[in-house]
Amino acid sequence: MSYDLIGIWVAALFTLAIYSFLYKENPLYRLAEHLVVGISAGYSIAITYDIVVGPKLVDPLIAGTGWVLLIPGILGLLYITRFMPNVAWLSRYPMAFIMGTSMGVGFPLTMKAEVLRQLEAAMAPIYAAGMPWHIVLGNLVMIFGTLAALIYFFFSKPHKGIFFGTGSKVGIWVIMLGFGATFGFTVMGRISLLIGRIQFLLGDWLHLIK
Amino acid sequence: MSAVNFWGKMLNVDRRWIFLLIGVVSIVPFLIPVGMPLTTTTEVESIYDCIDSLGPENAIFLAFDFDPGTDAENMPMSVAVMRHAFFRHVPVFMTAYTPLGNGMMMSGFEYVTNQELPGCYTPVDYADWATYRDAGIVDRDGLVAAWEADGHSLPENSVGWVFEGRDYALLGYLPLFHLVILGMTSSIEAQYPEDSHGNPLVEMPMLREHKSLREVDLALTMAGSSACMSWIIYGREKIGLPIAFGVTAVMATDYFPFIQSHQIIGQMGGLRGAAEYEVLMERNGVSATTDKAFTGMDVQSAAHLLIILLIIMGNVAYFAGGFHKQHLMKSGR
Image 1 (cartoon, rainbow over the protein chains, first blue to last red):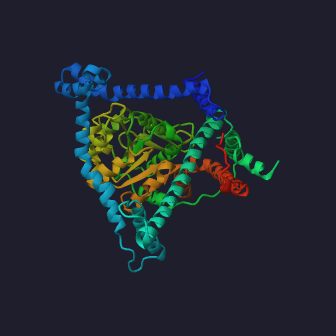
Image 2 (cartoon, chains in turn orange, yellow; image 1 turned 30 degrees about the vertical axis):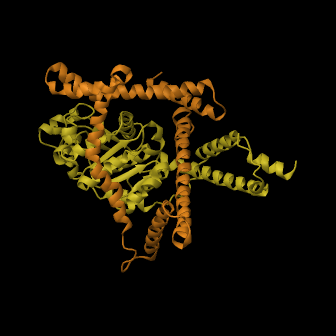
Image 3 (spheres, rainbow over the protein chains, first blue to last red; image 1 turned 90 degrees about the horizontal axis):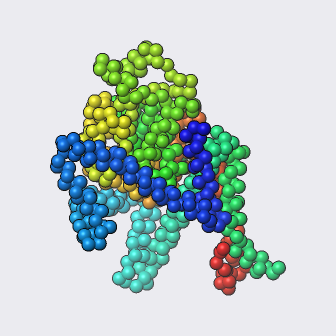
């Protein structure tokens, strides 16, 4: 029996073990669930050591060619002090380093990507010569929908009157439409995951489909 | 049984019956395929058109930014894009955002190069064509001609050669990948001195022609999490790198605004997005047949019909039973 075949059988049996939860919770499901978590963590640690820690830290240190690597190495090891209450505070240093670096590097670009570009896109001209009517309609829906949703989240004024009252009512409808679209996509996503497993079970395992 | 009891029982039906129904409608269409037609959307067409306009002088990044949990959605789209790029002889750099994504990258490449599957590509390891490199034969056409002149022939199922270092490079996973993307805007080789097989990148023809992300024509991130945003933040906004998304269906609505703002050229959403790409490939002769994503679309449609039916039935029971007035509905099992 080849390793591939063993792998397929193991995957198939654990797929069924996970789906057994649909009938009711049982020890087999719990076993499969815990194994997924454990194996994922173990695999990640092994890969990280194999790809990063070994070749980029341990090997150069053993070869004596990268003493400067001791600095990030020691900084990284300080994370482990989380498990020792007396010196747990030391773990804040690598965290501070990572957070500070990420914040400094990422903040301007993140602002640009997620805020300024979106603002820019919302300020597009509603109409231009030769623009098809459905694009104009889309622009109107987009602009008034954005404004209405923003009004709904403006809590400093009571939601009464034409502007705040009607605006927030339209806003909640826009938000609900957004939730509806997300729900539809979520259903599609969950069914897609089921399809993937059924394709595996019927195809790779039982050979009933190609 | 009174009418209220009937509608009440209908609303409180044991959910396991619903699971069973979903199971049945998810299995039957695989055994009795209908082959329902699938229309393509501009979001997917724009990705297809972009890759179709590229050639051996260009290069793309294919980022496996997902874990096994979303394999069913992200893998078919990754496989489809990889096949399309190989068909067009576009060099592909493959990366991974997480350690588990590294396995996904290997798995996707093994699927496309599985010699038992029709329409596969035959990989040539970097070391195997070293003599041709040393002789200065690095352009693709010349390399294939020299390789085949030496007696190598394509296996029965294969549709083409792919040379490691010329047509593809498996770069794999590195930690803090957002900073890796940032670093690659200056130099790919500085971040990845070697590929996943230990081959030095600096010697690879595809790297010599594309030294940084500034010289890359498209980055496709196949993501099951917000990892895809790193490509926009550090690739698109810093150097204007064209980006395309392949995301799970759950995430799709979150990222449509980035199409409208022209920060991404297109998006494949879930299994349907992958199926659309497969249809485009088949329609344009890139592949002889569609693959797993399209096969799953019959099931997707059947399951959606069932869910719509169940929602309608639930609403009918709720209103016909007068529960909207009485608030008698019990919590479901």
